[in-house]
Image (tube, rainbow over the protein chains, first blue to last red):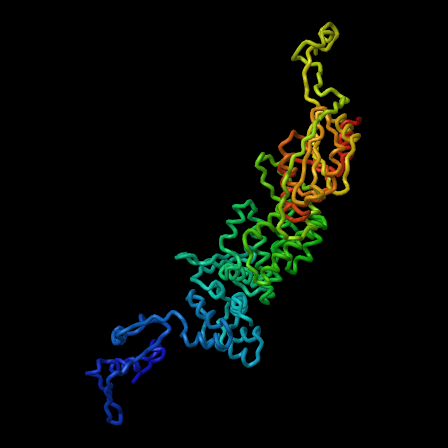
Length: 149
Length: 427
């Protein structure tokens, strides 16, 4: 069983308090539901939490409940493959942009751009809609890279 | 779909590497960029604005990074060109031209709005600077505006503009077609431009006046260079010296050694020492006028003995040599000294050797360069090598030899004679 917490750093104090209990060691972890039912973790129970802002912003007690902290420095390989499948080189461009983390492309915006293109919007318009003022640079860079857009 | 509300350079996408130091500068500063190298961060300096020109500058820098990262241009090409004598002005202009072609080829149209230089043209700028600026804008919108200014204000002629257009378009086409540009190719193209427009770095003197003089290229050679577009590999033929006996004594109009009254030397004019004389009783010896003339005997050119004698009368110490390719063997040429030290040989025996291709212009000019100055090259200015192949590299070499050895080209032997007449006022 897996428990996934998205954007954990944005969780409110009450949610973090709840997580303190939920993420405790399996032998002491007990969640009492309002219905009176009690939940205990089954063997193999895993909790995953993601955040864009890094673990330093988390409460130390909550942070210590995670056994491993992984720094993800690039987009998901699956996303790269998907984008490359739709337009040769687009996923690789996204991956390479992460080599300069301060100026990495927003993967969601790039997906929006590609979605607009696939729905028939011209590249020049799609990039403006997706990236706003950064559009000329993104489009120029992608074209200079050899993408046929 | 959100917008973050600001322009943002993304060099890592193009460079396929990072991170970069991105520095925004005013539009007038232009841009520069460098790929990351080992642990050194990349550099991307450009105006960060949304004006067309600012976008154009950024596109240009993306182009540089793209060409380098894709291997179409080696990162070390600039050092290669500089090591081989190409001025940095030309090297940068050539690379910029390729980059502009590349970016236009990938539909980055804003680059057309780039202006390498604001109007009016800088007053007093050297010709080569104006030429490098024009090369940069060959494909840009400003070229139309720039061309008449170069002609009317910069004093460029149509041939020079055509050479810049031709080479600029060829360089840009390599970028547009994504053809790898090796160093020797760029060296050849930019060497041609540097030979025509300068700057020329003289190894003999650092005198500015000499440098300016050497900037003048023979117009016929320049036109030949401009009209020779073949990139066929060409080389000079083998030079064979033909030796004839100088059996005919020519009685020069003036003595080979001139003795003039002076205050030093042997006492030859004692009458000048007596009362009323100027005291110049001694004789000073001065060398007679001379030099070396190399005459191109290829094609329809011919020379008769009368003309040789007239040259010797005017220039008693002249040495005259003929050269041409063998009519029956286009890979070899001959050179024969027909007059030397007031004596001449029988040139009638050489007539069957006239009329081939030039073949050995280069080696013959080297021979001339090692003879006594002044040096004249009597030729129509058409240069070709083995098998009569004309090539820009051969023209370029001939231009450099003419400049290096301070050789004057004359169309005909009569022209040389006329030039001596006008110099002294009489034969």
